[in-house]
Image 1 (spheres, rainbow, N blue to C red):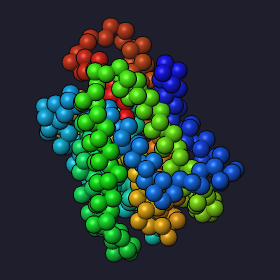
Image 2 (tube, rainbow, N blue to C red):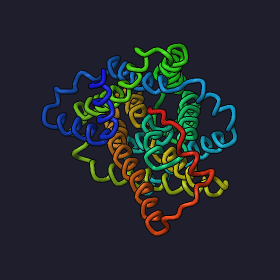
Image 3 (tube, rainbow, N blue to C red):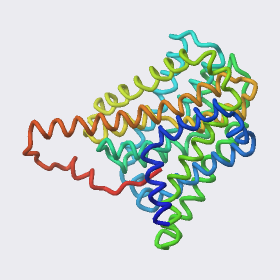
Image 4 (cartoon, rainbow, N blue to C red):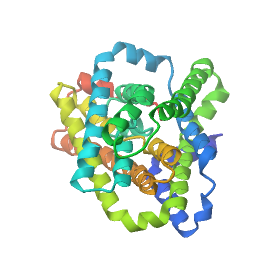
Length: 338
């Protein structure tokens, strides 16, 4: 198990590289991930959300109870900025209906499953990150279909009620099961071993979803790749900036501002990919946009976290006598890997 723990840690550390590698392998040999479609893809998505649920215990729910205002504000910011920004970017770039659907789908999904790891690396507020990701995931089955129907429902035929039920199945159910297992067995050695391996399993599952989409829609990506990347990059980077300054607007501390920046900018694009292939199977471009976002968000989020950490080191080098404050004390809280 020690070896598997080490593998899991390395997979989590190099998430972006693993996803890029899976996409590259699929372009060379599409059959590698051609099996990740239909019900298989739903199961793979469920594994990712189960892994997230296994990190949630009683202490995390206490955080939700103790800091409801911060988490409420953060969730409102996330579910306001990213959907509106998505449709605005789509219009700015004059994207096709399919690419618009994919970008808006990414923007209306909950926070990314790796965002709390990025918050930890960025010296953000990890408990706040866990709280925001949890709440955004819980309310996603209701909020995502409503936003999607409002923003693109007139131009894209969609089953909002069916999407609601599907998201309950692939988000809340596995998260609830994972969390219940964590609460019941968190003191068991065997469960701690399994939980330590799950982040790596989630990364591999994430890579399989991206590979599956690339296997089916790889040719279409080559035709519209540049505009997709540009649109997703603008959506993501502006999301980071608006998230950070929204936190500043509400007087949040530096760790919280960094966390809300990452939580707003990094979306669960894996879920968006699954929703796209499930509910819009004939719309290849929407799945392409979501799959590209899987890769981009993992890369950019890791880079942003490293930039924040680099900035702190630079500031400490300029001022070696750093006074420990309540903000820096928050950084000592244990990480909960999603």
